[in-house]
Length: 476
Ligand code: NAP
Ligand code: MG
Image (tube, rainbow, N blue to C red; front, side, top):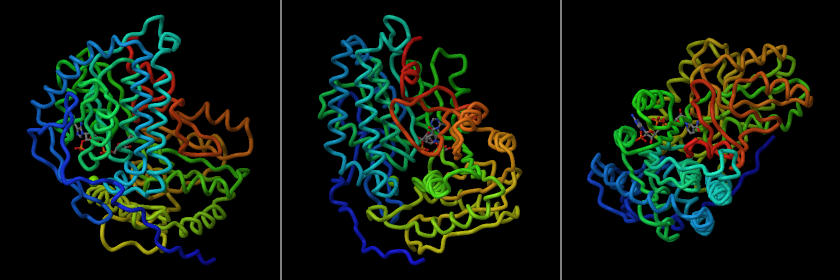
């Protein structure tokens, strides 16, 4: 069946208000960091977007001191007052949502329809939600007068730059902590516009500090003696290193790490909906999603039918300019990530899985990878065990619910899972068996600030979001 042709419908990049250079944000002001400036690029074109000043170790110290000083007043403000700031920030994110969405798509490569309809609104929602908690902490179940921890050091990855910032900063501020945050090296821009929003909201200086830089700046934040809490989202490898670094110190730690989620489709599932859920589960954000449904477990009796429908549906996805409103799949965030995806796909070929790649036209400039589905995948293959973090799906089959559970749980990770079936009893039974922090039923990749998110095993520990997520920032 032919796919409709659409004329290009690009969002204007002028909306991003892109500047030539950006600076670290310390104690309420943009400052010259003493680190080596970095250049952030647009991964869809490989052009340099802006030069970004970075922090050095001594800037980390200055930022932590500013956060410590701010803590003494911020933590004593009545919750109703802190809530006003959070509401203001939420409103300002909404007011500047188009600018933030276009800037995020330029810096990260994600399709504008995702940054516009998912990342930015969900970031605002996190501030609204936590504004609501700021004056109700005594009813959160952590005792009559739960106290903040102090200065939180927060380190985030490049896949959802603004959204991960919101997941980190909103609960920290609502509970009375102050923050030193390091965005990822390849996607620092929306964090620095967020710093402008803090100024616009007249947030007291030092409550939020943003330090662009590489991994060593993250490590300096982790090892700083006057930081009370570390919140990290990123790879399992770096998470483990951080855990070693804080072992034996009084620092509280939460880790949100990688995943290799099973999306499990039973023969009684509503197939057309399941296909949409499979596609959303693995191709949302080019598969750069820690909870991506990267392992499809499909009941053997419907495997052929599902594969056929899936290949057709995937062949209709449009890959290309992230700023085009019709684009489904944007750019891979970096040359490094593209090389990692290619390497794992080659291992799938070498280990004998059956590869199908969408015949869609792929731009010849920038970092792109066509949506790919591997059938006949076995559990021992690297593509079934390792996180690819790209638009690549591995399909395995099962015969019985017990076998589905055994295969789904056969992973060192445990962040999320999906179940597709008409039987409510089976959903509940499966959800109890699966060792995953989030289990979606007949849907996938649903995020809500009220729902706690986090992992089992090598996917990390601690929860973000919901009442449970407040615990990570309270002295309880
Ligand atoms: P990464 O290399 O671990 O980087 C994450 C952040 O840590 C970046 O800001 C990075 O800085 C910084 N960093 C690097 N080395 C560090 C060190 N030694 N000490 C402190 N900070 C350090 O991860 P990534 O490859 O960018 O991100 C993808 C990974 O994140 C995937 O594995 C994905 O599953 C995971 N992730 C998990 C969640 C979740 O909620 N569970 C959400 C999103 C992503 P640079 O940018 O300068 O390298
Ligand atoms: Mg970039």
